[in-house]
Amino acid sequence: MLAWRAVEVAYRDLLGGTRSVQEAARQLEGRGLPHSVAETMVRLARLRARVSHGDHTVFPDAAFDFVASCEVVLDQLEVIGWPNVELSER
Image (cartoon, rainbow, N blue to C red; front, top):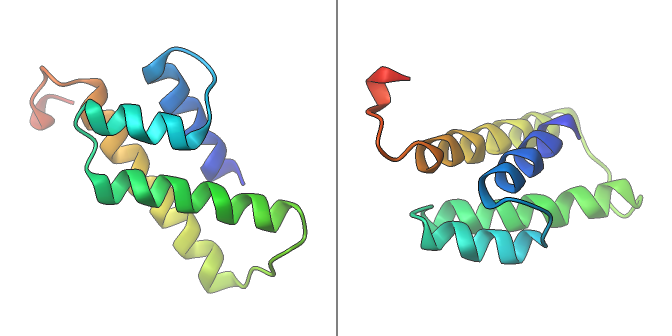
């Protein structure tokens, strides 16, 4: 769940505070986050909630995919967090 925590911290830092993941995704889309990434962010939050409440069993391949998806979201949040910097400069 550390991968999801990193996503939460990143979007809250970008938006300046605590809000629901759905609201954050909507606001981040307005800042240029691709819709598919915002949708992935919401789905990851739902999956994380189901797992943490014991409603879903996680197998190793699924855990790997979860972490990889969180990394994709984090990469995109980084891109919109620094809109005036070329990717090669980061």
